[in-house]
Each structure stands twice: as C-alpha cells, then as structure tokens.
Image (tube, rainbow, N blue to C red; front, side):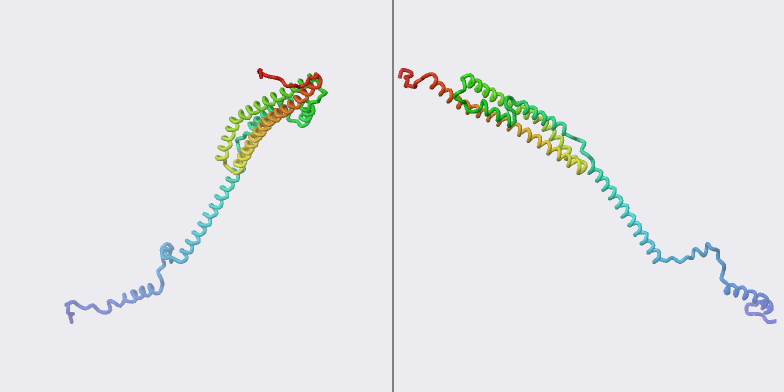
Length: 261
C-alpha cells in the first residue's frame, strides 16, 4: 500500500461522494432565493430624498412667514382700533360752567348801569331832555335840576366803570386756573377728540376774556362820553343863564376896578 508524503493513508474517494450534492444544493438555494427579512429590517433600508426634504422645509418656512404676517396684520388692526377708540374719548375736564359764571358776572355789572343804560332809546330820550340845548324860556329851577341830573349821571357812569373794572380784574384768577387746566388737559389728551375739545374750551376762554375787555371798554367809554356831554351841556346852560341875567335884570355891563387898580 502506498503512503502519502505526510505519511497518512489517503482516504478513499468514495467517502466524499454522499456530502458533495448536499452542499451544492444548499449554496444553490441561497443564491437562487433572497433571504426573507422582517419589516423592521426593511424599514431601516428606506432611501432619504434630500431634494424633497429641502422643498418641504422651504414650504413650511413660507407658511410660517405667512402666519407671522397675518399675526402682525391683526396686531396692527387691533392697535388701530385702540387708537380710534382713544380718538373718540371725550375730554373729562370742562370749564364751561366756570366761563359762563364769569360772563354772567360781567353782564350783571353792565346791567347795573345807572340813569342811562346801554340802550339807544334811553340815550335819545336823555339827550333830547337834560342834555339838550338849554332854552331861554327855561326857568332857573329847571336849569339847575337838569344840571344836577347830568352830574349824577356822570358820577354814576364813573361808578359803573369802576365796578366793571373790578369785576374784570376779579375774573383774572379764575381765567388763569381755567387756562392752566385746559393746557394740561390738551397736552395729556389721549386722542384727537380730547385735544380738539380742549382747544375749543381754550377758544371759549379767549372769547370770555374778549367779552370782559369789551365790557370794560364800553363802561369806560360810556363814562367819558357822559362827562363830555355834561361839560357841553353845562357850557350851553351857562350861556343861557347869562343871557337871562343880562336881559331880565336890566343889568348894564360897565368897566369895574378891581384890587384898587
């Protein structure tokens, strides 16, 4: 019997023949049919589409920007409604009653005009009577009574003028307080309506001050006019009285010597 180089007995060929077909069959089956994997294993092999993912992210960003724009638009509309509500708020401060009281005080002083009031008909009646031209036929008592009446009228007019001045000066303090209140309200106004109402009340305050000034000028002018009229009437009456004296008493004017000259 022959030995191999290693000294071992060679195995007979017949010993490998039963195993060879089995191995070949197993390999063929593995190559011919894929191995069945569970679903979890198949999911791990899903393909990632980068282009689709980028498009989805861009779309989501655009939708988010649109939502932000809508939120900002709603915020602006809400603020606009708030501003409109502020513009419709009425001014809580009112000085109307105070101004009306000042005007009424001044009107009351004007209404107290003595003898000759601020009335055209009364002025015409007075100047056709005691302030008219003196007549030569008037008695001395009548002339004296007219002069007394004119003097009382002038004194009363000056008194009325002084009262009006005092009333106007008395309104200065209340007008100053009203002006301060209105300016403060105008500067702190919440909306356009409050600012407009404060401005209107400031204009009303100016109108009240102008009415006080008008009353003051009227009272002063009345007193001055009556005094000037009294002086003119006195001059006219003096001329009449001189004529009456010179014609009725038989007085003859002649030169006289005074102080021993």
